[in-house]
Length: 119
Image (cartoon, rainbow, N blue to C red; front, side):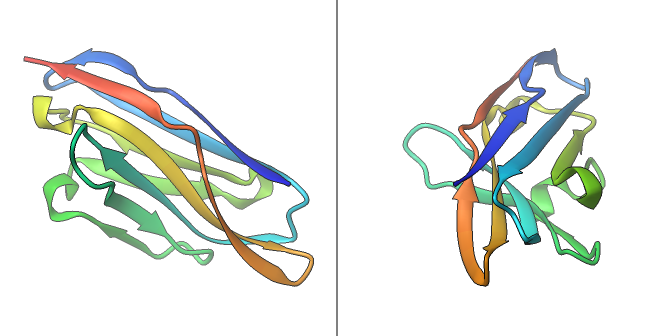
């Protein structure tokens, strides 16, 4: 069993910053892509940023230049540095990892962490 545990969400004023963390634990052989998604009530979960195992990244247009995704493979952890936050960034943020476990590949999600940006 693999678990993803997120932390770092909270309440921040417009223009502020937050750093989200997500750590995977369990019977992990290796981790491929790791990603952050966001979801607001009534809408589908959307990709915010993704990072491959070799460090290549991609971002949603709405966060380019403001957010930065990184990972520490030794700690099985992915980070999302969120700068210049806007009220429209308010959402529940979920991490996702594509994990190799004993020769098979699985997709896991974290429990979500709320980010609220005030005007």
